[in-house]
Image (cartoon, rainbow, N blue to C red; front, side, top):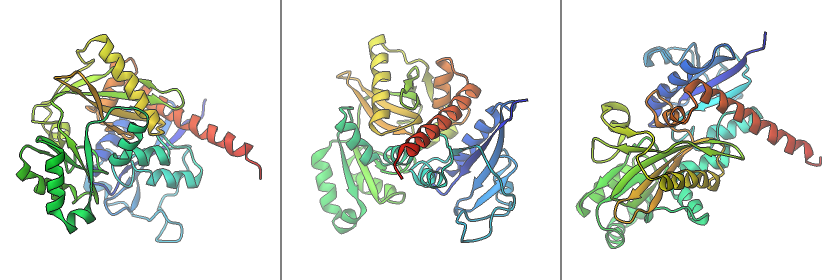
Length: 355
């Protein structure tokens, strides 16, 4: 019999997207082919403590009952049940998981893992850095401004005046380092901007303010390392005013068109631009790229890239690949293969380095 590959799922985490991470881990756990893979579940609680659990399918209170440990070898007690995995699968959305931090730990440990490395993860998490990289590679982005908390606390009036001169409502105010639409506000009147900025600064010390684009919202999934491929794009038609957290994970009334009902040339442009955005940020493994298609001009803009997109049963990343001919279990297997491929390539590079 072929030896099964041991896959360590890392989920939960310290970010505001903790609950979504648990849901994503459950979906991946269910779709791992048990003939090929043996899953190990590592739950990271909201305080950053690590727990080995039997399954991510347990309720939150049961997950939190397991003995906790710190991951630093010189601090705290070790995990009650030590383990060794062949590959690690971070399913940690947002800060402390999607931003290069857990990737740095795994790189230091010299173990294979799924998804982007430190640079791609960090660039894909920080919307300000992401946009700079997009602009440098000619990937179209909507007009935006970056506001730092220090300047906001020092002179909020000046910041608001500068934003009023730069944009006409509607605008979007969002934390630079957050996902799942957490902390985002659609500002319809200038008087609402102050409260929107205060909300965003609850989640990050850097905030992005973007011009509102009237048009259609599109998404495209990307898969691969050196030769990434894009899925069929989808269109999102939100039930609410925009595709916010409640729309994504609670209400379930959003309408999805998979594939998007667009001319073939536009669909091709979305896929090509998605791969360009993926490459601009130095991504590997997987990412979901979100777009706006402006109604009046037909211009295509990249909104953002997500290097660990939602992986729930209703999430767009796996749904788009399923519509493109790659069902969830095979998608998970392909991501694991890409993680091993990336690690082997890096080891070959290290082996060639003079000592």
